[in-house]
Length: 238
Image 1 (tube, rainbow, N blue to C red):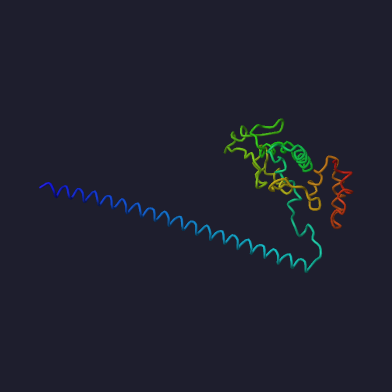
Image 2 (cartoon, helix red, strand yellow; image 1 turned 90 degrees about the vertical axis):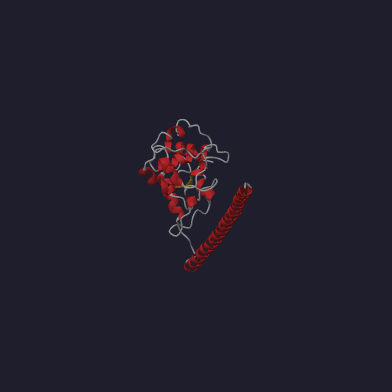
């Protein structure tokens, strides 16, 4: 009389095991299918990005060819050279330490724009590797975590100069004045004096005055500076 009960119990356990096994197999199949779809979409997006890049390159090439057919010269009315601006990532060296020469140049740029030169030290603190506020001009997490909303300093090179809008004490009016003269390029870069803005030119040396810069801009309008050494040797200290 008890045998059918035991048989039903075994059958139930067997059914449960089969159901668990089938569920496990189905789950693995679904997971593998999801991974395959993800890989396929990633490859598709990569191919699309390559095609977009190639299309942009072809478009720019056609523009340059058309420009070459129409004119033999290029000028600042046609291009915007980002190396004509001060690269804020120059404020730190490859070790994440503040570069004093770049810091002084940024201070001169701020003075030329009639902005507070203190922003140079604050910007250097924003991207240098340590979390210790520089003296006398500096600001680290102890300042920014007290803001509403609170945030922290990145303490590494930045990818967009608009990050400086978040500096302690920086208001919109001041940043709007500064923005056309700064850029955040990867690594450390030099200044292209043939395309630099007037304030950036003035920041190259402490002996450069506004009248000197006016003369330099007038000189480069005739095709750029022919002799860099002759032009800047008496204006910019080595």
